[in-house]
Length: 185
Ligand code: URA
Image (tube, rainbow, N blue to C red; front, side, top):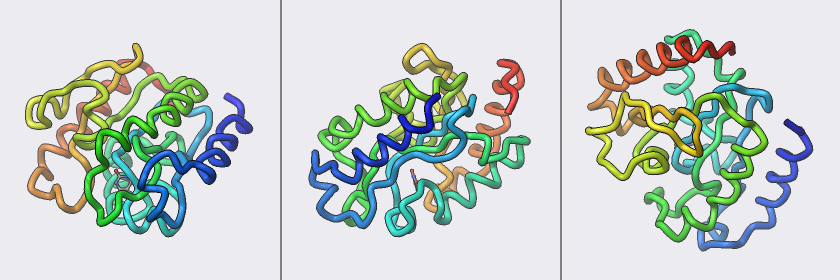
């Protein structure tokens, strides 16, 4: 990978006004983490805290994500972490299809640069990249995205605590997949 290419995405994002979400943001949030990562983590969109800090998964959901990863022996710093949409949806609503479409090129570039061995799709919006089905049917299962194994887990947001046990089980299965793929991280 080239660090410059990843930096280029962050530069482009600062100047991106392709959809309405650019109007309400403090920061466009580029992906971050290890540019040579084998594991890429894709969430939905930055929340309020991420918008403030300009980094993905740094709020409560990020803390839970770190814990769930640590529970299966994966360090966040060894992964590349990003979102489908790089700006905070106004009023914390889910991003609309046209916003997802406008932002898709950045995720495509990140995947091209990182070339991950596996992608962890966290939450329904990210999971839709791999399957149109409802979360209850696809969480804890392996799909593929752009010919890369892609594993779906429930989102680590506090709102999803009703799925806490299933979410832990999803991550446990993801840990097994990482072992089976012989991914060293
Ligand atoms: N939720 C996400 O999907 N992404 C973040 O970066 C933070 C919360």
